[in-house]
Length: 293
Ligand SMILES: Nc1ncnc2c1ncn2[C@@H]1O[C@H](COP(=O)(O)OP(=O)(O)OP(=O)(O)O)[C@@H](O)[C@H]1O
Image 1 (tube, rainbow, N blue to C red):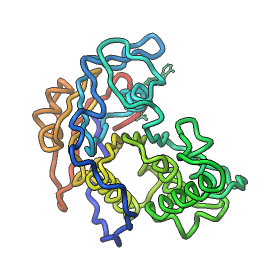
Image 2 (image 1 turned 90 degrees about the horizontal axis):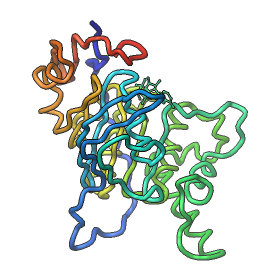
Image 3 (image 1 turned 180 degrees about the horizontal axis):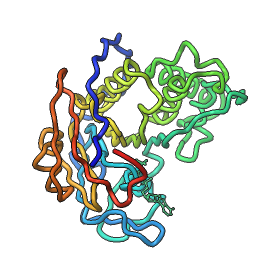
Image 4 (image 1 turned 180 degrees about the vertical axis):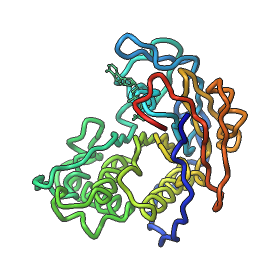
């Protein structure tokens, strides 16, 4: 039996991160799902990680991908990127050029001299998933510079974006990589544990920023998280993977003793601590787990 690290902590209020003006939303918003899984399954290394997964994410929805270590959360992200094939079922996701992706635990060696600004710009012209802004020559370069500055300001990284990224802290690097994922104005942001190297105030600030990107700018966000609490109040839904299956829905319906007990097939208790934070107690060891969850 292990305890999921969904701890109680008081998070100080953060100044709002400014969001630059975005193009106005179309009068007739597209109501089709941005991504959809129906009866989906994945296999890696000859083993089925999970199967029968149903998930629908609409435009501007914030979804957390939760579950114990090794259950296949990152593999779900790779499936949505088209980097891993579905072993069964149907998967609908945007074209990779319409997805912003922040991989798990990416960090730069202290000796890396490339500036933060240039790392962000790689999202436009050098990154695997990046596409150039329309236009040619000087006008295009000006538009790119403007967009890079805009997105660096959006993530609150203006103060250190001119420094070599190797000399930025883990949290600063994480903000610059988030800017890189956002720079092409993707329809879908796929983030693999983006709050990992951040302290609690920064977790709170990035969670609020992601909430605004979803709900004000209409970008869909699907984010792998080990601790749901920093993002809980911004989420529209969670998909909780365990024991080779998944349950998806609003957090208040999924992160409950009843739902998680059914999913794990063993008694699991969800506690509400001071500050309305959630702690999941009694999670059984998952056979595919790399450690306690
Ligand atoms: N290419 C591969 N070949 C064989 N096994 C793989 C491959 N990729 C992933 N796995 C295994 O699949 C399982 C799921 O991996 P994945 O990274 O998706 O888990 P996760 O839920 O994101 O884990 P964590 O929370 O620890 O990051 C793990 O046991 C991992 O070792």
